[in-house]
Structures are given as C-alpha cells and as structure tokens.
Amino acid sequence: MEFNHYYIEVNGVELHYVKAGNGKKLVVLLHGWPEFWYSWHHQIIELSKKFTVVAVDMRGFNESEKPKGKENYQAHIVGNDIAELIPKLGFKKAHIVGHDWGGAIAWGFAMNHSQLVDQLAVLNCPHPKIFIKFLKKEPQQILKSWYMFFLQLPILPEFLLEKTLKQFFRYFVKGWCYNKDAFSEEEIQLYVDAYMKPGALTATINYYRAMMQVTIRNPSNIPSRKISSDTLLIWGENDQALSKEMTYGMNPYFEGNLEIKYIPNCSHWVQNDAPEAVNEYLMAFLK
Image 1: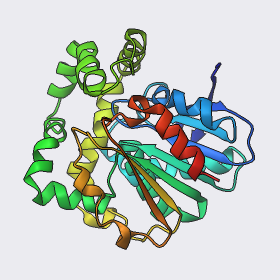
Image 2: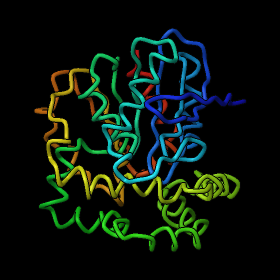
Image 3: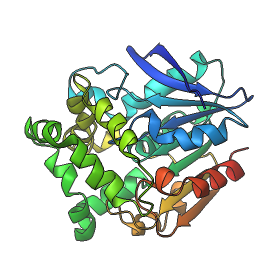
Image 4: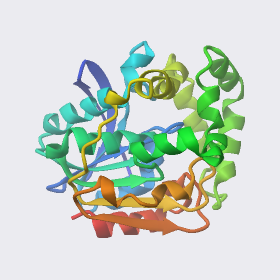
C-alpha cells in the first residue's frame, strides 16, 4: 500500500502525518517511544478500509518539528496539537488510538478534549493516575521503569543512543517481541533513520523529562476528569516495561464503557507483535 505524506501547522508547530482511506469518520493514530508513524503500518492498511486514517509523527519525532525545551513536550501541550489537527483535517471529532506515549497523550486528550473524541482506544499504556501511583509505590514497576529515570540525565542518554541505535532497536524492540519476524532489518533501519534526524533524540527523550521533571512535580497538570467516551484497552500480557496489574480496577476513572482485551504471548510492541489481533479488536470496536 502506498502511504500519502502531508505536513500541517498546528499549535505553533509543523507536524508530519500519513493519511489513508476516505471514510466518513476519522481515526487518529498516536505512536509511542521509540516509534514514529510507521509503527502503525499494519493498522493503517486495515483501518483505511472503513475510515479516514491519519497516523501522526507527534512533535519531536521523525519528520515533525522539534521545538527546544522539555516544557514543550508536556502531555497537555502535545494533546493541544491534536485538538487543532482534527478540525483542520475537516472533521468535528475523531476516534483516538494511542500506543505507549501516544496512549498517554490519548488518555489526557480524552479528559481535556472530550468533545473531539468519538471513541478511545489505548494500547499498552496505563491510565495516568494509575501509572503515577504505581511509579511512586510499587517496587516492581519502579524496576521496570528504570529507563525512565536514566533518561532524566542530561546529554548521556543521547550520546549512548546515538552510538548504539541499531543495537538498541534490535534488542529492546525486536528483541522483546514474541513474533521475531515483527521487525525486519529494513524496518529497523527505518527506525534508526527516524531517530538520527537532527534534534530527534533530545526532542523525543524530552517527553520523559517533561513528565518526571515538570508534570509529576505539579500534579495539577494531570487531568482528573472521568473519561466519557467508550474506551477499549488492548494489552500485550508480556509487557516488560509496564505491569499488567495497572489494568486492574480502572472503572472508577470512566463514565463511558470500558472494555479490556488481553493478548497472551505478546510484548509491549503489541500492534507489531500481534497485528492481526489488534486489527480485529480495533475494527470490531470502532463504529
């Protein structure tokens, strides 16, 4: 399938996105770290049979603009990018689908911009209130989140990643997958190329720095509204970065219906590790 590439200015930054399909309803796909729009290529193909699909390079990633300063990567600011994107694409609202950091943006977006959300789907990213609780009090999750603390260091994470990017993607991305064919060597190179773009490493790491150094220190930045849209959570059960226990007891955070689908023998990179299952669940859920 040929992907069509576009650029658009929203919220003071230029975003790159890929668009497919001509459905009456819009699906916005938000990737995580260390990913970019291409992490959704299996879903773009399937969802575009029914919807207009837009897979965004979020600010700081790949071809999108990379403003300087960690304060520019707070979740609510990234969410404001998407809030301006939807009407500029000619739609009143959208199905929002996010994985990992894209999931974190999606959670906040559903709370702060509920009028723009048709339905919400999140892949392997816990609700922010639950995540922060686990990060502060649960030793198992603190150990799993070691890399988040490492990324708080200045300069060193960028230096080490720049020297080892291909090995990093082979070990932490492809290496974690149960389906070892999930990422080809050619695809690994696409990821390496995306993160070798000038300023990309610092910009994308700044999502973590903003979370730990700005947002968590000021809890008022964390939205607390209940989510009114119907929501689907898809969870690869063998996530080495995030505990499955964070998916328990979520109902108090929702006014709309919440549905959870667990995928066994599946890693954190769920949309690549088990694309058929993810596509099936998304197509059945999104109306």
